Length: 135
Image (tube, rainbow, N blue to C red; front, top):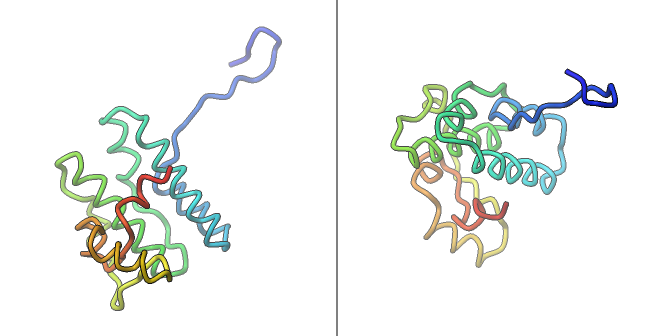
């Protein structure tokens, strides 16, 4: 498909959970990894409900660190729950043996203990509910 000037037209495709995992594998800077997560959430929010389901359905490839692999499972389960859907099957086996607090600040850790969404607590990931709104 080309535009009036003969240039190839690019069509927008929102990031899937599987694509997010690929970005996280390539980027080892944690701050940038969080930016990718927030970008995924922003793109997800703008999609219609039937498309949102597609964005979290497919299992992402392992990232190489358990905490990020489990975070994606918790995120997918959380988003499915918001639509009153069962979590994707691939999320069931991803859990941390030791809880991961995504912030080292004592005040943020306390906030995470109180406000972490149920899906995240279930998987052993503690982050503030506000962190999911940062996008």
